[in-house]
Length: 339
Image (cartoon, rainbow, N blue to C red; front, side, top):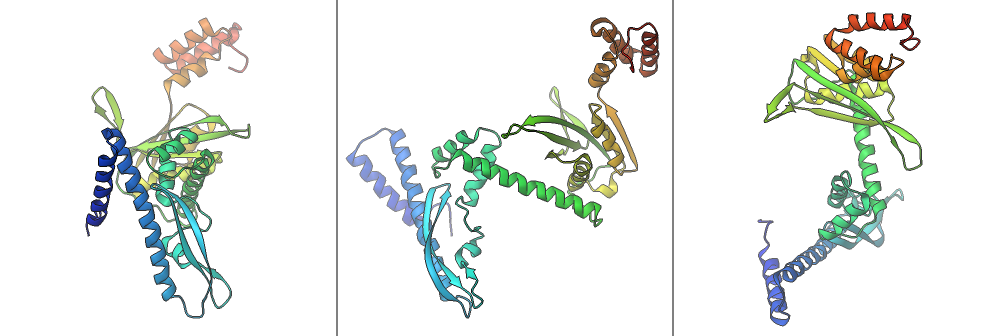
């Protein structure tokens, strides 16, 4: 069956639109909007009828020993507007409540948003404000939902993803079951960093992130990471973060065939120490030049002159020469105590 165009439905909409054009001449913009409203309203009504028909089929073949408890309405916010339908609740022989239609369609009890609408809210809500996301769904012809519904959708999606990452780490580190990789690389480059954000309750939380890839290639004037894989966590302990990071890398690159890993960080201990958690034959840590220069510059009492000299020394002369210069500055009092 061709699901793109249903001849009977198309013919009915054609007749309705033709009547609209004959009775109330309008520009194409108004006609286009009317066509969309008619099509979506018709789809919502057709879906409602089809769901109730399916419920009747399931009722006719209900499990032995079960009995009808009631028929109750349910409304879902969908990408075509609200869809309301009635479905049957059963009581099995043990007195447990069953809803064959909901269970057959994989609809969680009490969930008011359809899976497709939820996906829309999560995808858009990750990039734009929640209220704007709700408005976008409505503008696209979907149901009206609140900004809170969008927020809760992203929260649920985030919790589900976080649990998947934790489960993959448990499988790898507890059960020794590596993830199923989709590619191979002998050398993997990784970068890790974190930042603090303010939460809705006024507290702060650290967002940790890592990206791993199989080198870079030129794309015009820019360099592009090859086969990147990413992980982001909120307020995870460093050990848990790195276990999840390795498991995530294993979803892209076969861990048994990775020989070398280079980890780049800004010098913060929890990221520098991550190299000890990357259990590969050859693993090396690298602190980026900007943060190295800033760290050595902070050793000087006078950041403007002494700090600049130290930063220049580490760039042009190397770390040993810079260390000797810090020792000299400590002796003449131009370096901070403990530098």
